[in-house]
Amino acid sequence: MKLIPASVDHIPHLAANMRGADVREVTALGRSPHSALEAGLRASLWALTAVEDEPVAMLGVAPRSMVEGVGVPWMLGTERAYNCGRALLSLSPPVFAEMRETFSRLENVVDADNMRAIRFLRWAGFEICEDAVQIGDVSFLRFASV
Image (cartoon, rainbow, N blue to C red; front, side, top):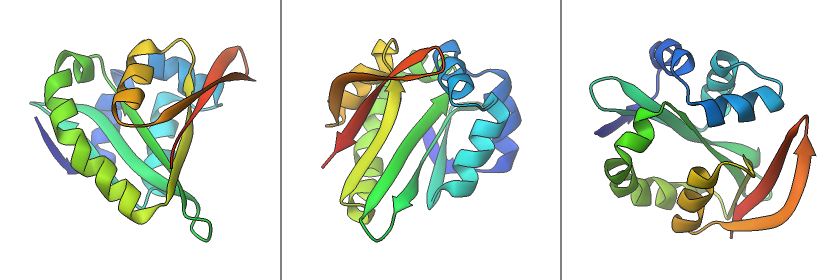
């Protein structure tokens, strides 16, 4: 697996094959898989696509407030992202380090039922707030890295 600069060309495959947990999150936030990927790519200072023989995930960081140094990390992927989880984990530390060099605080929300994502976020050093926030019919947990 390798990380390459994200491109709009990656969006159709990722959107068509997005894993159910990510579809549930983006739908609750008022987006389709395609529009969520487009919005993430457009809003991000930089974004990457994890590729094996095809795109398996897109991730990036968007500014919430450049003045306050707050960034919003995000990742949307296919089931294959978890099938090659070790490779993705091994590529993650420099990505998070780059995010932390740009922003003094990283924060976002994650579906409270998405235990794989929550485990990954904890592994990456994020604190998970246990107080759920209801958005639509999905309970979300805030996460942050300071």
